[in-house]
Image (cartoon, rainbow, N blue to C red; front, side):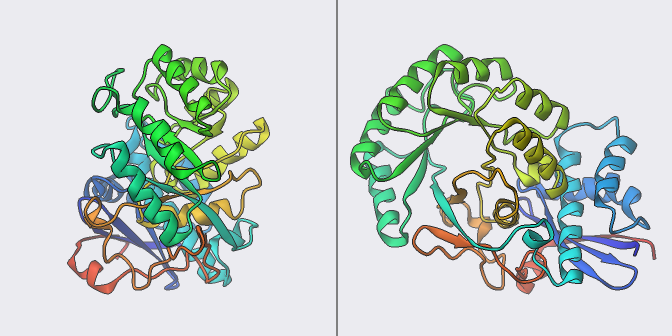
Length: 367
């Protein structure tokens, strides 16, 4: 079975991919969000020429050979584009087998506990507490992640004192039965990160994400070694060599690959297996409700070192207007703080016809 055509349907933020084989079989995937129109162009320019007329069954070969053929372009955009091909082929295989992708990987579709993930820094501690309490009561969430520091902030907070205020405020408001996680988004030097980490430990925070510039692995390891709270990271990293180094040096306690940033399910499975061999859990990054969260649900249902929960964005159209109207039926229904992995063949979702019709269209084909 050969790959006959690769189509993209793109906006600036979302790019869906449809792969068609020479026997008519089809699968749907997604390039990474953010500048998805650029990733779609990369897919047609630098991925499709090496994928068309190749064996649709051999995803491992494709995700290895394409970076070799495009070796002068080792960075993020090529991986974000390859992920569109990879995830579409996983969907195609699931549909041919009559199994969910989770089952193809040896897992079982099931409910997953989620942590409700806040993206906002432009809110006061009191405003964030009120919002999270409403979500707890409405949807049954029992775990929340919120933001400290400023994104790549160089020890400068979003405003003076915000980090020191929001941590105890949210702990007091949520009570001891709620799990709290924080994300610093590369905001601190090691010294400042450790200082904040001591405060997190004192307030029962269980997860400390990306405390230092993510590209400075030695800085992150310094924080990891100094603290008892779990230090986590890896969402930005798309190079398997970096992943091997990060895991070997135990720069973090929990790894957080992003299926779309990393280049698809096949490469993410490799990273998860590296972590499994090192005894590290995997709690992937999936901070929006495009297909990346659905991909991650299937992954968590299959890997033996899955972390405690799935990241689940709580941001609506005021923050992510481009998330609206993507699906015929959303796969993201939350009940008692849990979401269920679909058991239909492939990813178990259908893209909205109206959304596809409004998107920019490109095709690479043998015809």
